[in-house]
Image 1 (cartoon, rainbow, N blue to C red):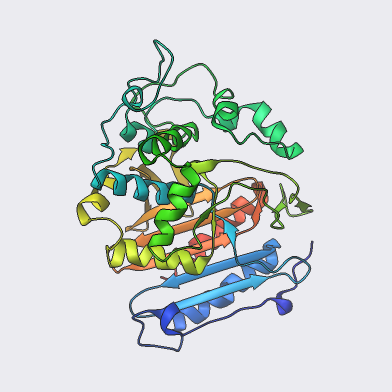
Image 2: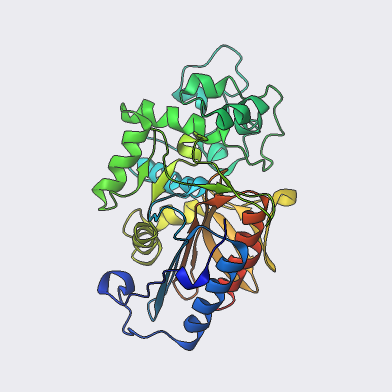
Amino acid sequence: MKVLSYFSHFRILGSVFLCLACPTALLSQGYLKLEKEVRKIAADEHFPSLDIIAWSPKDSVIINYHDPATQDIDTYGIGSATKMLVGTFVLHLIEKGKLQLNDEIGQLLELPNKSPYATITVRQLLQHTSGIPDYTRNSIWLDQVIKGTTPTSFKERFQLIPNKLHPLNKFYYSNSNYLFLEQIVEKVERIPYDKALNDFYKNLGLEQVQLQTGRDSTQTFFAQDNTGTNDVTATQETYGYAGDVHTTSHTLLQFMVKMFVEQSIIEPGSIQQLQQWVSMDAMKIPVGEGFITHYGNGLMKLDYKEQLWIGHAGGTLKYQSFVFFNPSDSTVLIALTNASGSHYTNAFVQKLIPAVLDKL
């Protein structure tokens, strides 16, 4: 697939919705340079589609890039950034008195006698300190994804969890944690986990936050290097609460402003609970010259050139996302693409995101 930069579509909008409190409809010189650099990276790295929003109370820019040889899309899977939305929902349930962070799985769910999971807490599930192995690292799961037959039920995915536990209270990133959170939510809400999450965000006016349970027909791409790209639309991934939300960049902007600027989704104290950090140690994630170093109750902390960002990144076999907030100046950065694999991951995380962060 060849991306032709002169066919790229860029929209820079100054509407009330997009700029919110922004008094300036014209772009600053920094944002003009940002647009030019994003255009070049997208063309050089052959991205099929990109949606980027950089917003602050003073200024904002929206960049939509689309290769005309591919489907024009505005809804993306956000992968593990879903965990931030789930963590927010769980803290809402805690505010309502339906859960506690220290509740144990064995208190909430029916488990076999002497289950190794019985004393694991909601907090440990959210923070990835439970030691539960990741079912998505099972080779059987990957084979099923490629064949388009990925398991969707709790039982099927549970059976893919390897038997050997990792050390308790030590960070180990595992999608299996959020598999258990699905069951806990169903127990306390008495409705399917997907409906519970979707209804919560619909009631906030964010109805385009949708946990997808059906087949994903969005055109997506995968590349290990810059010499060729595979269309992987036919492959099917199922992550549930670990990574199945599909939404738009505009909706994510609304969420981030409501969540961190207005603090109108959950109480300020609950937002602080999301930021109960544990060190990611050897699993920290490089982002240009910075690192995602700590994990909270559904949030990541990025240290980038003496700037602190909180939010979540996501990467699947089909999509990548970066959804972060800078508390020092209330800047929001959102980046979404329908391309993955080693080539696109490196281009997205190590080139595109740092290029944008350097202009903010």
